[in-house]
Length: 212
Ligand code: U5P
Image 1 (spheres, protein in one colour):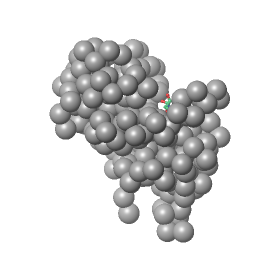
Image 2 (image 1 turned 30 degrees about the horizontal axis):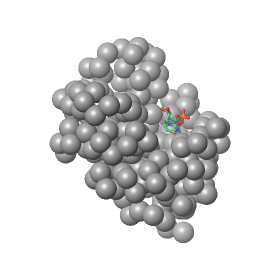
Image 3 (image 1 turned 90 degrees about the vertical axis):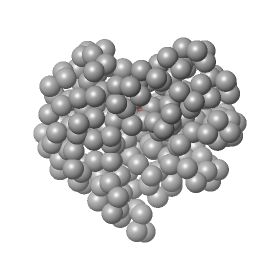
Image 4 (image 1 turned 120 degrees about the vertical axis):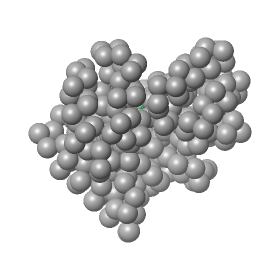
């Protein structure tokens, strides 16, 4: 069975991030790096974590096309497998990310998991249409907002990666059943005494949902 878990490494200590990545390298689909880890260490952490698996940079790129290109090129050169971009900035901005990615996998945010995300989530269909036209590889859609997730799944066959499990209330079984391909999990894993056990349990739950 394919690996289904993406671990978000939102920790402040680089050593902790690397230790967790090393211990989970055989059982996760990928690692997700967000601004906190980069800002507490250095951009080179992208390459260092890449030694233990695919790295998706969750930088939610959201700027003018030229700046987006500079960010995306640098992320690719540092060794990332994927990058997460916002889509609400419009076609030119998102296209600049896709073009600069040159083979790196671009995921577009079309809905979010936090309270108050209605402003973006209510425009998810329009953002998806634009993202598909721009040639994104996949989407970020919330695991804890099942109506939004289901609607997004119904509009695409592309890959959906979903945060919002555990600490944000989402249930992994329900998320996979309603369209998530990969579950993004941060605190439930890196705050656990046994991150490997936590990932294994999530993986088993995802497999059960796929079989059902
Ligand atoms: N993330 C969300 N929701 C979104 C998009 C991204 O939680 O809609 C990111 C967070 O920034 C964090 C991870 O890096 O996914 C979720 O972590 P946790 O809530 O599992 O600790």
